[in-house]
Image 1 (cartoon, rainbow, N blue to C red):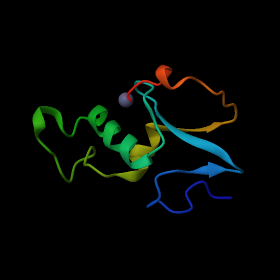
Image 2: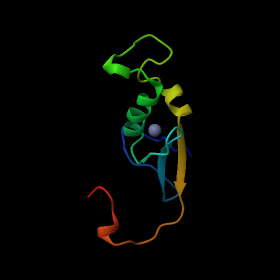
Image 3: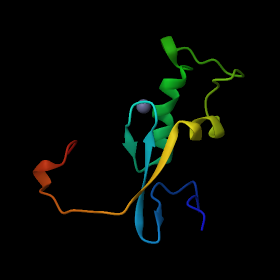
Length: 89
Ligand SMILES: [Zn+2]
């Protein structure tokens, strides 16, 4: 089974388990592959000083290079928590 059935969808699962994407550089996670890849671009440096460098090794939107920075994690254990424990709400 492909874990990328439709790249336009921003949530994935394998046999009902949630899939998370994690940045190999700093450990940030996201359920959105697109959002994590946007994050990973910062590590690749193409936006350094706010300047985009197209047509280079680090050019933006290189899916294969971004996947090298991306760990794909299957969430097998879940635990109910209190809403107040959730960061970012
Ligand atoms: Zn990162």
